[in-house]
Image (cartoon, rainbow, N blue to C red; front, side):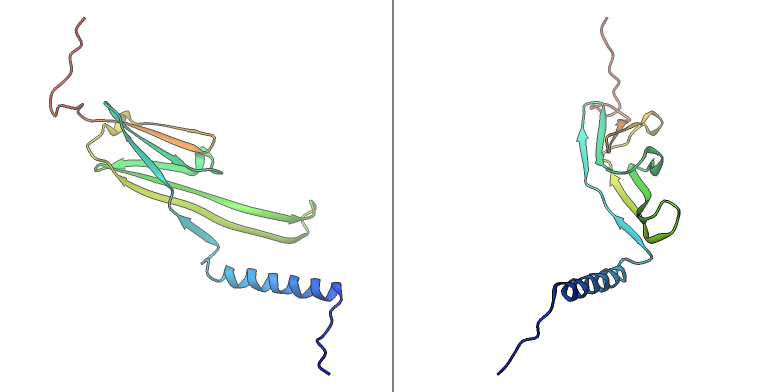
Length: 147
């Protein structure tokens, strides 16, 4: 008679916990030196007098974000250290993990902008960058308001 092995609940829990640890170790080998680098979805809106770029950067602080404009290219870099703490408040950790999360995007702009007049805001994880156009809809012409 062929009998299948029987496990009690604690043995099964132990096997599942061991498999879970081994899977975490295996997937960690593919992450590189505890760093994650990814892109971010970018919206580019063409307004009459400027370009407006919107980027979702949840979890980042203003100080984590670096913006630059050069040669009709907007570059967005955001880097933060993420830690997941588990353990006692007295510093005797059972487990503590850290990783670096970074986002990098370079966006080619459709026209030249006045980089010195660019402005950026960051609210609730959403970055908005306003880049005034070098010339407004008419090439070299300059709009004159009638008073």
